[in-house]
Amino acid sequence: MEPTELSGDWRGWYREYGPRLLVYARHWTSRQADAEDAVQDGFLRFWRRGDWQRPDPAPLLFAAVRSASLDRWRRDSRRERREQIAAADFEPLLEPSFGVEEERRAMIERALQKLSCEQRETLSLKIWGDLSFEQIGRALNISPNTAASRYRYALEALRKQLSADVLA
Amino acid sequence: MSSPDFNDPLERELRAFRPVQPSAGLEQRLAAAIESLPEEPNVSQPGSMIRFLPWTLIAAATLAVVLFRPDQAAVLNPGDGSPAATVAAVPLTANLVPVSAENLLFGAEQDEGIFMVGGAPARRMRLHYLDTTVWEDRTTGQTVRFVQPREEIRLVSLATY
Image (cartoon, rainbow over all chains, first blue to last red):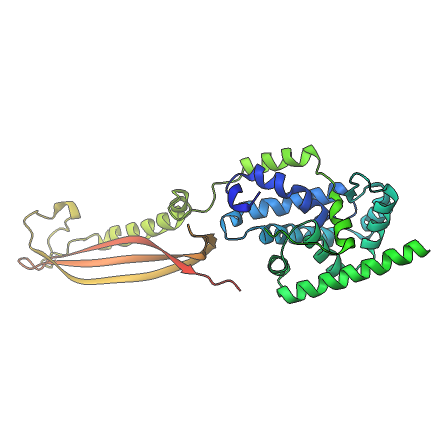
């Protein structure tokens, strides 16, 4: 559904973007509950500011969740971060689709974690956020060319990582 | 929203994965939070005047003190030593003409950014004035001064880059 069709229906926005925002927020925390808190904070910021009324609001929604995720990440103590990393294996980021083996999903998630933060979030916004490079640029405050470049590098890095994992 | 064309096999494989669904609790928490939010920003929102109420009260109190101090109780200045009259005592037939006007800016503040109907961002500026007008009765030489607080709201367009 297009954002223009969603207008002031926050539930429509949430249902359309909730899972995409959650996978995006998971780049700053490996715990689903923390990611949901960040999505909640970001979504409320987006809604409170009336950003949904602006033209092409989707990048603003992702930017709000990014900001909320970073705020939470900064607040977390080092001990909590260690706990999150330890719990990461028990809380998958992605659901397998039919025909895709669970082992492959876990391999991809591990490879994603080895990408740089910039590459990982760009990849996530493109693949699961379904944003164009121009929209990614707006969400991350970078140029569309930079977004495209980061995405290509991310894809290549992920490909190399997966190849290395298969060979290992 | 874009509809990207994913040609790379790895891209297609990644797209085949669906993000984990949020828990039902998240939607409930959002519903509770959004329902408790104040109304969205609106230039003509009645609540905006309520926010200005403290300024209005301060200005009105100041005005009352200035106008009704015992030693300067004369709103009308007869100039002949006779007891001061009040505004209500001004005869309806008085030949009043304005002789001076002053707009004193005594405060300004910025509100949060808002979005206009078309989605353009703007910042709302609140300017607090004390408007003073002096009228003179040409026949008697008496003057009367009206002082009233005024709030002016200016919308300053913001450009985003």
